[in-house]
Length: 430
Ligand code: UDX
Ligand code: UDX
Image (cartoon, rainbow, N blue to C red):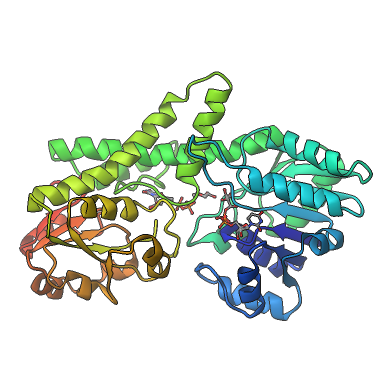
């Protein structure tokens, strides 16, 4: 099938490459000329395990194409996915200006029947506006709008696409449904077919629920810490209940990324605009913001005055196996430390290029040991595998004081104590 993906970011590029891998002819569009130029030269603008090989192979085999021209992509495609950014506005609303711009542009170039699919995470009823704006700009050509939210996790996006728990299709016509079912058929995954509003809500509700699960376990961790309980064991005991499930029960410095913070805010605003109050999600946000403060307090507790102290930070990406730093906990934490006059040294295996532009006063190091050298304390913020394998004896010699604050519980408290570290983690006895 001939398809177009408008927006070649984390979601658009992964989806486009995977659809091409399934044998479709895919045209990926982006209004960032530099990004498109890089992609046609085999330079992948984002880090995602396996993506470079997938893009290069499908580009070489002429199943994957890149352009800045929406016109070319629309005219050559039957199904057009919108995967442009939907960032938060200051008031928490999703900024839909790119969705509107792209919808208008698609409408102007439709030369025959198309299915226009919302893949970007959008507030419920966005499809009504997309349909309206498209009809306003092209009342001649028949088309359908659909919603097909993505559930890709950065760091495992290709696997998540190829082996989804479910495909969600919000459709209004048999024609659109049949086309999309056919497109996804090779994945042999369960398909939930519903109306568009329900599909739009499934995405916001799923992300908000996962964020709530994380804030819940973090709130429980803070109780554990007060009474000498071990959150890792509590999470294990909870997770064995199939109604709860063991995933997304990892306590730590909190969630970040381009989705959870944005989607929780958007869902709260959707409820408010409907005259409601989503107090539960407001509490989810509050707990999450507090987790960064909690780690900061642990550093203060270990060092008292932070002015002129050197703090080593390991991990800047919002999670391992990605270079994405959007709403990363490390950014908030580093700014809190710098506001107190601390000097921050940092290292991340993949995210430092992105981080340099927004953290100009951080001393970026080429490995974790350079971060530890002369630091008053070392803080783990992202649980990269490489940090789990650190030579802790070497770290101990390099640190000015043997203080480690572990925001992702990657080390064993008993072992750290035996090694003579002043070690603090989240929700576990010291
Ligand atoms: C985005 C949304 O943020 C997310 O909520 C949704 O689930 C999927 O799409 P992501 O891929 O991370 O996720 O967005 P981003 O990395 O910001 O990429 C969006 C791309 O669209 C960028 O490359 C941007 O240049 C491009 N874009 C944006 C256009 O091509 N045209 C536009 O008008 C606006
Ligand atoms: C999320 C959703 O999982 C995905 O379905 C959706 O399409 C996009 O948003 P993503 O944000 O890429 O994916 O990564 P995810 O693995 O969900 O982690 C999000 C944040 O939660 C990270 O900062 C991670 O560190 C944190 N997290 C995750 C926890 O703190 N504890 C956990 O148990 C799991």
